Amino acid sequence: MLKTFTRSDGVRAALCWLGSLYIRLVMKTGRWEVVNGHIPAAYWDAGKPFILAFWHGRILMMPYSWRRGVPINMLISQHRDGQLIARTVSHFDIDTIAGSSSKGGSGALRAMLKALKAGQCVGITPDGPRGPRMRASAGIVNIAKMAGVPIIPATFSAKRSRVLGSWDRFMVALPFSRGVFVWGRPLEVPRDTSEAGLEALREEVEGRLNAITAAADQRMGHEAVLPAEKVQEAGT
Image (cartoon, rainbow, N blue to C red; front, side):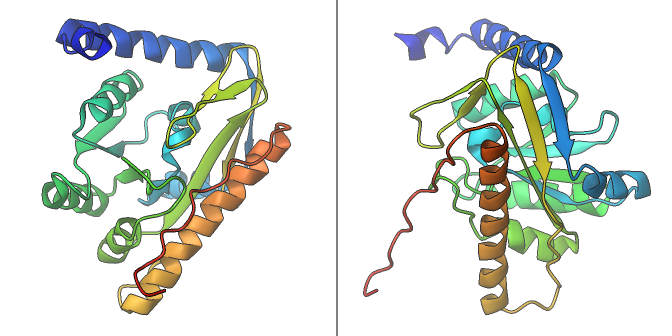
C-alpha cells in the first residue's frame, strides 16, 4: 500500500520537500561542530576538485557538510529510493548524476569524469546503493585514478539520533541535539597505480571512512556501527 501511495509524482515531491524541511530543522535547532574542516576548505579556496566519500547510512545531514556555492554532483542510484534522495538534496542546490555499478554505470562514469575535469566536485557513497554496509566498492578509486583527483572522506554523527535497522544502519539525527561533522585526510590515487595498488587504496578508503565514523559516534557517546561481514571468496 505504501509503495502504491509513493508512486504518485506529487506525493514523492511532497515527501522530498518535507524531508528537506526536517534536515533544516535538525540543523537549525542543533549545535554542530566541524572537525578537520580545514581539509576541504583548502580545496574549496583553491578551486580544486575532489571526490567526497561518505557512507550511505550517513547521508541525511551531509548537505550541511558542504560549503554553499561550491558545485557538487552526487552519484545517486536510478532506483526509486535513489530518486527520492536526489529530489531531497536538490532543495540544497546539490546536482545529481543518476547511475550505479549495476545500472547506468557507463553514463554515470562519463558524467562524473566530465564534472571533475571541469573543476567540480563529485560525491559518492562507496557502499551504495545496496551494500554491503560500510564496505567500499572499487569504483571510487578507479574514478579517482582516471580523473587524477583525491578522495576526501567525511561523516556525521548526532547525540540525539536513531539508527534504523536498514541494511545501511541509516542514522536519523533528531532536533535539538549536538552534532559533529568529521573530515578525514585526502587520499591520492596516482594514475599509474597497479591493480594490486588500487585494491590497497580501496581498503584504505574503507578504513579511513570507518575510522572517522567510529570517532564521530564516540564523540557523541554512541557505540560504533560495525561494517557488514566481509564476503569470503570461493576457495578462501
